[in-house]
Length: 111
Length: 112
Image (cartoon, rainbow over all chains, first blue to last red; front, side, top):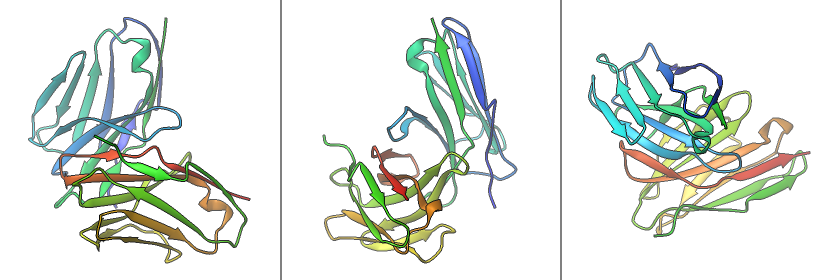
């Protein structure tokens, strides 16, 4: 059974602070996706990383895929209240028709 | 372009009943997946359909079933509902899968 462990589970920070969320597994994935989910809504895709060692930047968000394709991280610079939500990593294997989701990191950014 | 549409948004059912949930994917997307989200178990994969064929299935009992129509719209059915089936059911569509899914807002099912 593939498992994706995220840490931390909860994070409460003030606006302007930096943070990193980790997503770890003992399994190898062909791609790793990050989503953000807000209450009452479905997850929204932020990024997909497919190459070991790959780094992608989306404005203040930086995503990294581990060299062995077993882990990933999400770094947010200068967090804003709009970043508040549940962050989920999801690993895909093979044809990627089945995603294994991580345990989730709930982020709250206050003024 | 329109997103993934799930109906209904909310549903209350009694234990033992059955329920059918509907999902309309993004136009042109042939892959439709279903997930169950609960506070205790997180997001768990139910099944995926591609061009009307079930391509992958998760570890759920046979009470959970689905189908996909020729226009890519999908339905999932849960028979003999149990209290533990209370969850947010999410549908996601994709053209390739490997590069990410677009999720609907979900159907919140409460079994009483």
